[in-house]
Amino acid sequence: MLAASCSAMAADSATDNGDWWQHTKDVVRSKVETISGQGETSLFLSGYSYHGRNTYTPERIRQFNEKSWGLGLGKTLRHPNGDEEYLYGLAISDSHYDPQLMAGYAYQWNWPVAGKLEAGAGWSALLISRTDTWGRVPFPAILPVASIGIPGAKLMASYVPRLSGNKGNGDVLYVFGRINFN
Image 1 (spheres, rainbow, N blue to C red):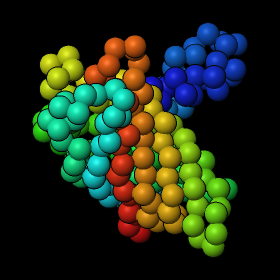
Image 2: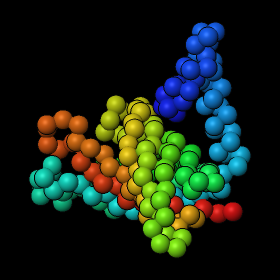
Image 3: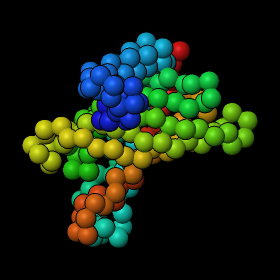
């Protein structure tokens, strides 16, 4: 997933020798080493999953766990222009009260709002493991990410869209927080 985000860079410089795959792996490895080596340690606190009221019946929503408590650790690298990159891992209680494991990379553009307050938007490429999807075999996803807060502490959200016309899948707003430690 992170490799896909770097493939355009890799394709430009590696098409001459045809070794684009090795170049892409090198770019990804370098990015991971930079974020993990230079980034601040981050604590992720999971808290709430809002299921779309037009996608699920009231009876089904009452069955769901919308208090998706959990914890995660990661590294956050803040660039001089204010943008941020994250490597993270999270374990939360999913909509069915089962463990959900996630690990990934995120990039977020940030804009000043007032003083140190900033708003951010970006994307995350991750692997997710759930008991109700493929028997816990991790599967990839790319999801939007948004935030509001100060550089070292943010209230964040991601959205899982409904990918089909069928009701009862997706349409979930996931809210969590991030605190950095120097």
